[in-house]
Image (cartoon, rainbow, N blue to C red):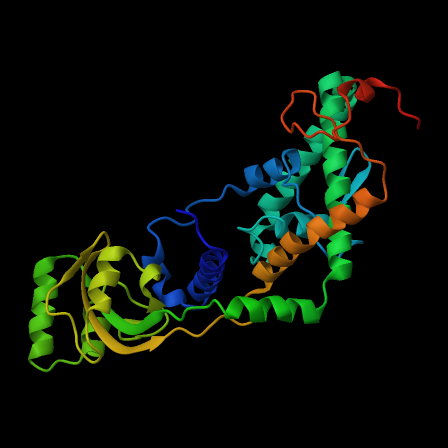
Length: 331
């Protein structure tokens, strides 16, 4: 079954809301996934970034206040702190970290990357035909993406961004959210004992602060998870929590891979739509999707472009004969 455009728009907007909500509700992120970032080997990561960089062009080049601070010298080449900052900011796992916390590993990886590059340059490997071809292809991709980025940046305006945002909001379907608390314990018996205490009048927050394995290290928060949507929690927890009425707690323990939970629902509401700032990445992508074909059409109109059909796929009567493709082209 084909999805309609409207259905696709709803799906896209839902993804944006999901991404932003998960950022806002840090208290519940332990239930959002069982995985996450486990260990990052910084030096290797930076080295890979140099050897195999992502083909990505930023719309606006960032200025660096630390351009003059030298952090290393390799065969006379000065490496600067601003270079380290640029590499750090290009790695999503490191982008939000202060440079002081990753400086040593970042510098080691950066230096290793430059050492390998210099060794490659001295070896003469650049003259090999396959390497020359790869360099040519990389250059072409970088130039093309840089040109498109400049064109998109020049055409994007606040008014166009707002228009895309307003149009997407038309397809927004508010989702249910609940505000809940939980107590996490290791065994079913412990959870059942807590339910008995609650039925006898014990305060949920007090039990959570005393018994829960999932405690806020900074303060006693009574097991508060804040507001969350169903898709932000693992299914067993979410299905049980959303079935509880406001002001009530779970009559039976809820089992998840983390242990056994007792849950109390404080409130239910419809999630608010994302702001234009939260939608920025989506708006940029949507604008590029709509605008790149216009740019391509404009540029093709400025050039003499002939398209051939040597394998007979198009079967259009006005396609130029294939023999013409072999004629010399005047430069």
